[in-house]
Every structure is written in structure tokens, then in C-alpha cells.
Length: 161
Picture 1 (tube, rainbow, N blue to C red):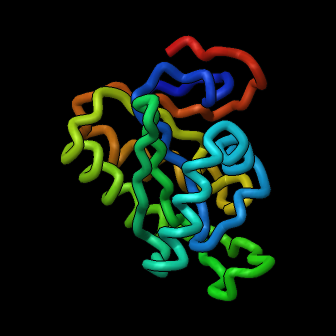
Picture 2: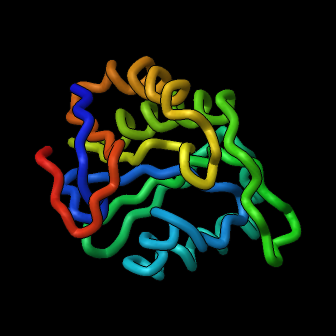
């Protein structure tokens, strides 16, 4: 079941939050910045992962915190390999497609019970929601769990999930 909601994704009751990033992203904008501020250990582990594994766009990296928090970072954007002052590149529909396929496999493999994601790749990533939303439905609708799309951000407001 996919449900579109309005609210603050940081207040979700979903077991997992997935969001789009670039390899070596500095998490300086939007949802990534909010996640960095709320879970600094996740960002530290993300930096280590990127520096040691050199992830490619179209893949993902999953993080689990001590408090049962799960964040899945989807590499929807191109990235700078310099590691210094990196500016995330644009997201692409092929990267989003590969990420969504990988996300579905990760959710099934880990047995997650619910998933929340923003209007993926439409902020810093620069894609049009009208092109991304159908991909989310195509690749995540087969999941037998609730999937909440936070299409409209409302700071401090819990969505009706």
C-alpha cells in the first residue's frame, strides 16, 4: 500500500526512512541536513562508507542506529569524487530507477514493516515529481508493507499515516 501524506518525515512512525543523496554528499541541504542533525552517527558512518567503498549512483547504503532507527541512503544523484567541498550533482531517472529496485530488494531482505520517503530526487536532485512519482509506484507498490510518500513537507507536523 502506498499512501501520499503531508508532514514532517522526521516524525514518521515508519520503521525505515529512505532518501536520495549523492556519493560523498555533505548533507548540507534539505532532508539530508535534518537527518545529519538528528543522527550525527549516521552521517559519520556515511562519510566512512563513501571514502572506503566509493559508491556509485543507482546503489544504496543502509544504516541502523542503536535506537532501532533505519535510514536508507539512495544514491540518486551524481557526486564529486574529490571528497572536499563536494557539490552533489543532479539526480537522474535511471539512477532513481536503480535505487528503487535496490530499495525494494533491501526492504524485502531485511523484513522491514513500513517505509517513509520524501518526494525523492525533486529537491536538490532537481527532477520533476511528475516523472519520479510513477517510478515509486511501479517499483514499491509490490511491497506488502505501508509505504508513505511525504510529498509535501510541513515542519513539525505529524502526518496521518
